[in-house]
Length: 331
Image 1 (cartoon, rainbow, N blue to C red):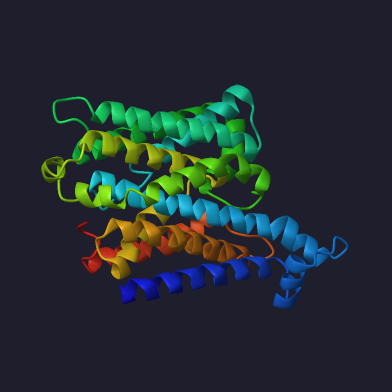
Image 2 (cartoon, rainbow, N blue to C red):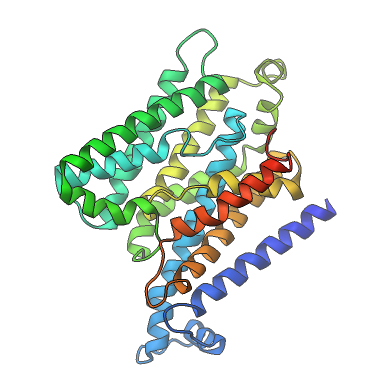
């Protein structure tokens, strides 16, 4: 408990430090005292205050919300499938969102991130329903292996459809290129607010499922013997994965590795108890995403790299290191 408490304090401190850096660092460096003045006594005539309050603060809030959603979605996906490599991507949810966005561009001519959101959210929910419908067929119902296989099949099918639509419509390819990598640039409260209720409600519900995931980790037979309705519990957890991942993907685009790496990393401090894994994954993923966004702004000045690329560059070697140390091979 002492180690977990210390870890929680360090996570909160890391998230606060990342937020401060996100407000102060960008194309132009802004002193910390100016950041404080902008937050406490905003001056609409001060260009630095305008940049902080109107641009960097909303972008930071978007990063926190998306990070929390993806961290919880990844932990839930690994718990409900009992698959250490599970995340919203392997379950086909990100690909479903991408397919819906491409369809919106081709069929309805959408061009703005705020418009992408509704298509992405609907596509994620449809993908989750497809995976559940396929995996629940048969006498055993939606077992972890069947969920993973159905997710991989749906992801492959949707990815092929996305590629076909993009090849057939060059305009859709140009419009999709920016969103598909995953980015916080250009995202503000007008994009976040429609998705915020889903993130808040889904996140709060996810945090209550720690005991459920602990029982699922014991195996379906043991969980059933202890009184759990396994199918219903897995359906609820899967629906929350779709809600959280769909909302996050709708706001920022598909960001790989965040929901995969963070739950494994926090297990060093929490152990296998999902009550703590979920509680740690939310702030840890938010801190990592906001910090990656800061790095994305400074590595290619005066331009910037998409945050999805930075997260992948950071996440891939970290995950390889976790696997090599043997801590990510079992749940």
